[in-house]
Image (cartoon, rainbow, N blue to C red; front, side):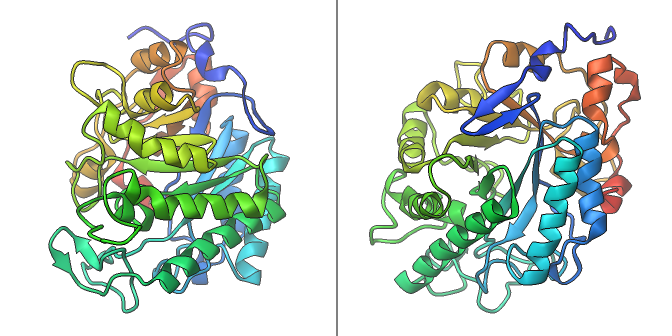
Length: 370
């Protein structure tokens, strides 16, 4: 492939604005769990990690998932919390370092729900909409209204903390089979009350979370929602099997106050529905009219779960198709994950056209997360 040029890559470097947020370009750092915050407290090394990506030219950083202030939000001790005096002080330092480097940053706020630990076990107190870890596997009682209300409040409190600390917006993790997604998915939501039912009805819990966040942060603070068709419990799962179903799913979420949809795919180039080349972000923007972020193996030829679990590496590829789609305004922003771990200056490398500098992804890099 011929070297990229500044003109060729221009779509990635156009400014973008949403609500009160102005971004210098269309490049987003995707959220990636690191487990580098002992006792849930992000230290100076975490601040330096994100600052390096801001210095490298990323327009918007979305942090790794951070646990909301609820006792069952997550159980790994080294995953950062978004509550408690010491953890929030650590996040304030992160924000300050990113802003000093000229970057913008959202925290991703997260509740894991009824998902297993790495060893396949479930932690005492884990909760889910119907007590189902996956279709047909019931391991707990369904969440009560009291449980639901407490989690809604926790998301609102986390968003309010983000605004107070100086973050530029907030992302809600509603993807990949975690708690919000467990409500979305009929495989884990078998409720017969107002939180169950058809796909649109199953958005009620997320709608309540979004509305509570809006109450806490006001109308101008950008709110992003990450969602996915696939689940870690089932990579082939689909919430919406047609554009009409996707529209019914997205409409109440947009109406509740989502400004930006982060549409998680494992491979961005794959069409979401048969007969049309649009990916998930493209369909979301077409149907709802809200700005979208695309993500999924950008500049790499293989998705992350395959490379993470095997001895194989992902090879570097070009971004011609990505740029063509971005120039057509199929989506608005582009989230980069593994390539930014390998090279914090990925945006500058791409803008210079030095694609040979982009190294293949190696498994040991993920462990270091430097």
